Length: 343
Image (cartoon, rainbow, N blue to C red; front, side):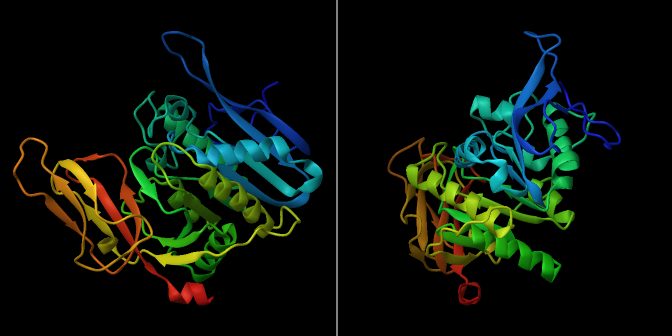
């Protein structure tokens, strides 16, 4: 039986197959009509689980906003099969594969409409498939949530230090709530993150509603590791404990606090070619230091193009594939945040 979500004006074409309000643990799908060559009256079926216990806050946990990022989906699937209503004060909405078409294809953007889900929020009910999913998530799920955790990692093209992050926000109370939740996640690194392009991001849309929002970057390369999935699983439970939804001791270990204060953090490729990293993730760098070189691939006997750090700090992210194009992000340098560490 399909359960309509009431109060959406204009209505969404997305319909849950489960009741997202009723007590208990339910596992079903978000059904979105998708007419295509191999199924004229077909549907896109996006897995969703909802666990509702006693009265309390609501957490929305999302993975595969980009389809080639796997730590979030693995952590969410694990919790979905293990979590019981009697453990929960409030409600946990689990959406392991938010951009389901991209996830099934193993691509960053949807193969259906070529849209990057994390650049199309808040979406719209009468737009393309990806925007319809974003619209439902924003209007029907984010609107119900008190705290949102949206998992990311580097996908096929980036590799990151494993970190949880919040953004610099204009309202001090909102900033403090998001920072505290990112700290509670307790990844090996905790970052105050600067986005180079935040228009249409889920982050921006959720934060615009004053919700507590946490995101991550948990390694990358289009795969996962035992370590990175372990960080994702631990962090998920820690965030639910922080929100008052789970009542158990958090798992706490050391975390280094980093800041991304300006666009000087980013080094972009000026030439196409073969990338040689001279610094590994987590290593210290100095402003003006050559941290990578780009070798030409159309000739030999020519000098490589140097890529230099724009400030002092540690290498927090790097381009993952061996070849780069002009404009690609080669590296991201973050700086130690002594004030956050002291707090």
